[in-house]
Length: 300
Image (tube, rainbow, N blue to C red; front, side):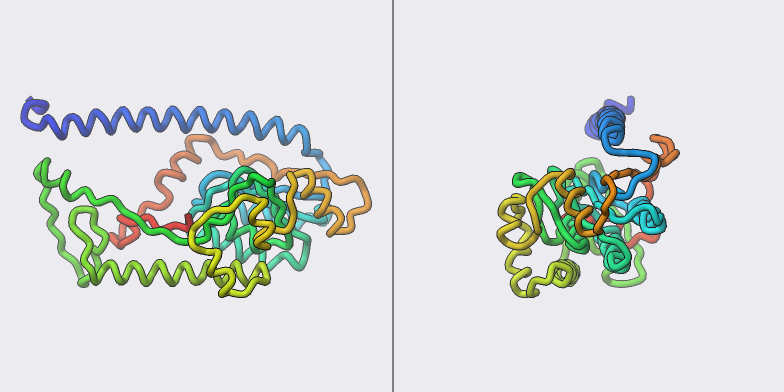
C-alpha cells in the first residue's frame, strides 16, 4: 500500500538504504587496508627508543584532538629531538586546521618541526604545513589549493514533489539562511560571501606570515588552484623536494642529532573502529539550528 501511494518516497528510501550499506562497506575495507599499510610502514621505521617523532595527518581533517595530542607526546619526550608531520590530506575543517597551526607555532621553538608531504597536502593540509620550519614534498605531490569554499545542497524541488512544505519559526531574520528547502536571498548571499572572504583572508595572512612571504604575493597564489611539488618549490611554497626519508635526514641535521636517526610513531590508539566511525559521523551534529547545520564550509 505504501509503495502505491508514495512510489517516489519509497524509491528514495531504497536508494538511501543501499547507499548507506555501500558506504559502510567501503569504509570498512578502506580502514582495514590502511591499517595493514600503516603496520608495514611502522615495522620498517619504528623502534622502542627513537629520536624523531612522526605524526601522521591522513585523510580529511575533521578534528585536531588526536593530532595535537600526538605532537605534545613527542614535545614532552626528552628522547625525541625533532618532529616530522607526515601530511597526506586534501584539507578539511577551518577550525581544526587553525588549531593545529597554532599549536605548531607555539611550540616549534622548543623542537624542530618540519613537514613531509605525501601524495596530497593541499588546502588545510598546506595550512598546517606552512607553520612548520621546513616543508619537503615529492615532485608530483599535489599541494596549494589555498582557499575557502562554502556549499550546500538545495532540495527544494524534491521536497515539492514528495509534498514537503517547510514551516519555520525563527528568532531573527537570518536564523534559517542556508535552508535547503528554499532559495538563498541576495542579502544572505552577501553575508555568506563576506564570511568566506574573511576566512580566506585569515588563511592567506597566516600562511604568508609563517612562510615569510608578502601577503599580496601570497594572495596572488591563493586563488584555489593546486600546484605540483616541483612548481611549489619555485614559488617558495615549499623548501625541498624529497620523500619521507629525505625529511628524516634533513630534520636530523637541523636538530644536530649525532646518533643514528630513529623515527618513531605514536602508540596506536585503543579506540575501536566502530567508535571512530561513530565519532566521524556524529561529532559535528549541531542541535542549535544554526547555519552550520545546512552549510559545509571548509578549507578545501
